[in-house]
Image 1 (cartoon, helix red, strand yellow):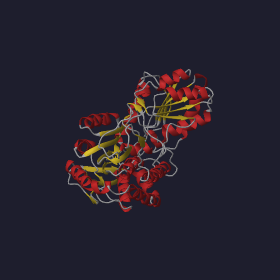
Image 2 (image 1 turned 60 degrees about the horizontal axis):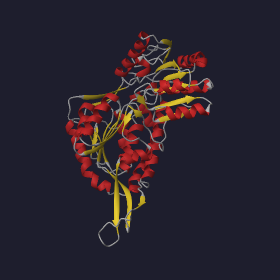
Image 3 (image 1 turned 120 degrees about the vertical axis):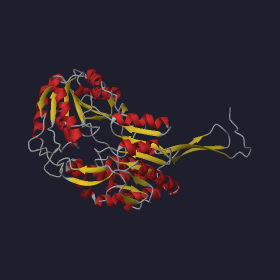
Image 4 (image 1 turned 90 degrees about the horizontal axis):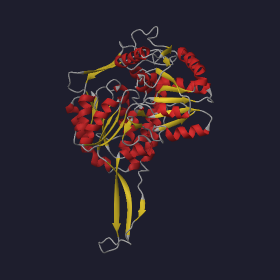
Length: 489
């Protein structure tokens, strides 16, 4: 596995005094790799390489660009276990989830490979005589992609694949704490025949490398996934420079459980949504809004299941939940648990570091009951295995409380009442809605993204994900022979 950065088809270690330390969060003494961080100069070199390569890549036929992704699919399938093991070691997620993430990325590669044939426009009738009008989509140019640590394989794929199949060239900054998985993706695309300069990766801090990518005049579009604080600042800066931007940021996702819900199914969905990936995903279930008649029974079921989850290293096949990704996130999780206690929430289960943590960044699956909309644990994103349970007396209150946060990514409702289902779908303020299933999940052919402070810009994945990386061009062909527009009135 290569380490360092990748520019114009070559791997190298930047000339920097600051080291990137890739550490196993289950065992911080296990250092996976250590290498110099990328610099502003490295970011600029990557941008120049991408700019120089753009004309040739833009003029490569779309289907041929797609064939690179098809070849990457086969390579990734052959290396699935290697990718999953690497991801589990550096990010901490259990192997079952890591393998699932690799397969999700492969599905995205397959979908966007086909998009090389489908960069379609529209033909439309003109108001003028003897005039043919249509639209086409063309690549933007050099694009900057900034990805987080929680999905170090799938998220880079769902940005890189549409960007390059649309004909753009890329400068990619992965999260500093998960560079190994990102490096494997770049290596696989290189092996698949992607020409030098089309994809360039610089591993470094957001303040240094990320800012340089955003501020460079050559980058025409920026796609970012990460925290609201960073994403909002990035959006403001990029907007000042008239760049095309999409930012996918936080979530505080609710599952509504109505009186007629199947509580066993709801429990399964909530446990998976709240504690899968250690709660470290923007689509994680962090709130439950449950009808009073069934609340006590649901809380009992949730507490039993959560307390039985086996917490351990991701590389241990018997583990059901891994560690927090690093010490900072671990401390954030524990601090929110203390905040919830001080604000009067009732601890149902968890609330601390599990026995046998041995210095790893482990947190027990934690559930609080009696959470009200005024509490911080109800409103603020924890990004860890901490679940808040509150009451919603009817569908109107469920909608009100679901919407009573600054985020609007995803949600779910458990009920058999079609009237409540449709009312909830219509009125809840989220970009995605699930019915009788977890808040998590997405598919390559379906748009992904949210409303309010969750995100700005176009949706990701699906056709919308490709469209972000293109400019729409409208064409008028006048075959009347006069050189004039002959409008029909």
